[in-house]
Image (cartoon, rainbow, N blue to C red):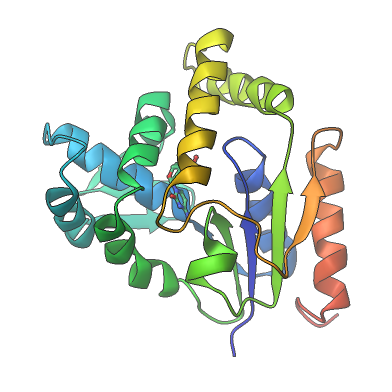
Length: 222
Ligand code: DC
């Protein structure tokens, strides 16, 4: 059985960075499942597809022509790594993620990332729906204030102009949508370990996750 570490949590809780570092430390592959929802949203926006047509959006998700090459992400052969991080794409991703047709279309694509020697997957339903048999499940939370600060910093670093009050509004809206939807809502898996990163730096969170992983015998042998 190929081991999986899942890291679920709300927007801007630091999941992406933590998942990346943990994957590096363990020598595992990494799946940023949010990128698949963002790619579906971006493809829909590019086609001027209405974001409330579940069937059409499910078809877009099923036919996504994407390629992950290290940190770079390509949609239909065009690099979209930076464009994917835009807030409009993130909130559109959250809107289309409510549809079971979209989620089902992306399910096998996500499971295909489970390759030896192991996988670290981050998202909202990694531990509950996509990899319910994961060897380690982390539920990463942080206060709204800490998350707004982080997201602002992240956007500025990517050269995107950020407005804190609209970010706060967007973040609350996305939290509500991601936790209250009927299909695979963001919820802590029963067997997940909760880490609150509000007062912790990335390194400390990574160390805690690696500690949990070591206790379960995960990672490369010394
Ligand atoms: O993690 P992120 O911010 O890149 O994700 C963007 C949106 O995609 C998020 O608001 C909800 C959706 N999503 C999801 O529904 N399930 C996942 N496993 C990952 C993301």
